[in-house]
Length: 240
Image 1: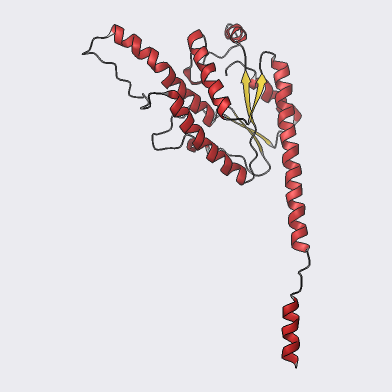
Image 2: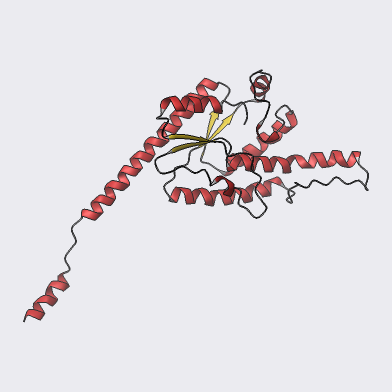
């Protein structure tokens, strides 16, 4: 969600960790082709081993954008039908072919789950944080002169109807995935602290897991091989 304190949180994280290990990517604005997985365009910016990478946007931002297009298209179509005659049908070249956003969301989440499991299997630890603010706080921040007028993905955050639909979509997504960390963005300072603590905790757990795996591997390699008693018996028979 916009104006929820994500930028403030990342700035604080830069002060808490070695900036040489922290990378920030804004892989947003991609419209995947119909035959492309929604995550594919983001794989060009993946963290190397030992790096910490923060994504502004990512495959979930693309997913939310597509879902919102589907979820709000029904209302737009109804208004268009009232204004236009039968001979003047409105055609959207970018329209998605799926009528129900719930079905599209479920399908994409299944593909993203498989992709993320593959990342985890290749020793990439994922930390998924959802910054949320209430409607009143959002409207207040949108009126701030410092607010960026280029809102993410062209979503009309000033529309109460759009925000309510976005919250419905978000609630559905979060119910289907139980690995999100919800961060209350009403207080940007507190949200930044919560985010940084979550990241540092994840880094510590990843370090402990890496050390444990290294120790177990070393012990396995230095473990003396057990002699086969049958092999010794066969040698005695040959010497006779």
